[in-house]
Image (cartoon, rainbow, N blue to C red; front, side):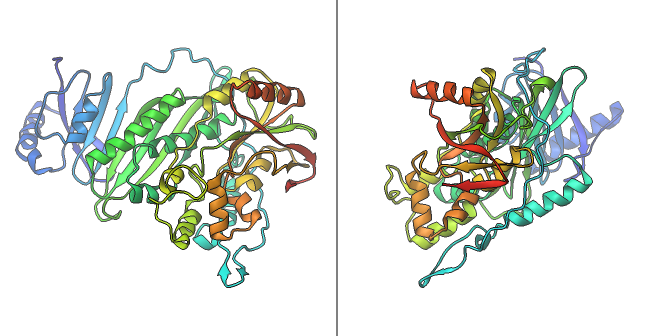
Length: 450
């Protein structure tokens, strides 16, 4: 067993400020206090440096598990504070080879959509806004923020490095999909969703993800549940070839309902400045290639939950027209497109990429276009998955609302040259992957559907 250095430091709850205790006398005093009161979970901090920690009873089970991770340096703050998890990673090469990333695309356009809460006979048609999510309000907030921070509005933000590269960063959560995780007890894949939402955003600029950080907040720490969630985050990082560099576990009594938690994630990638994909070279006649989704992914669940409640089905019931339960279909983890997209980018011809999240096709595709260009989508270019058919039928949701809320079976859209489209579709036909030609770029504004 390697030696382990233990240093006690003072800590202020919920401030994130930790001041070292200086002086041998003070150190000795606080070490004694720590050992006297640690079993009562008083606020004290233990910083473990390299090596395997000795088995002190004062450590929580979660802390002990995290300390078992090799080449890790973890900082724990007990009580009502937070557990910060950081490590030195050897997964990032000393000279990372960037692929590409983009300047922030223009701010999302505000789209006027007819209210979908009108009556259909005696049954009301459900809408995202009626379920409590106002996309237009979010768009307005982005517009206002843009006045204070010009240039925002893209899927990822860029920070110039000295030399020939940009760092690209993105942050996101998984929304009220967590509510279904609580109901179904499926927690081991929600971390994949968390990673996917951020890494899929930054790869739209061509950026190769480097590392990821997470934030796990709960009222009372359930160690076994938290371990499942973090295991999913680790899996997601593996799928996107990035390092889980650290995170924070915040235990906040009385803030969340018993047994519930919230998640946020943060991804950072890198791209060469001359390889940025920003949509500026898109022209009319370019082709839209769609990559399949695994289901709803991590957007639209406020509306989905309303549909489930109206349908009368249990999450344990079989999905009509499907081969799994409704709960399993809804909890299918978000596809991480990083490796596939970077491979396609490396062969040339990719001009713009849109991650189809909140806002669906209607709001996300125009974000990558120069002014004066729009898109036509051929809705018969791919088969609508059974899950979306059920959602629309059970909720009596209008087509326009579906297109502005859900991915409808296409989670990533690539805008490519006609020549690149032939190559990509040829590779798909050979079984390398699945891709659909879903539309073209046209002169005009917005997205039309045929």
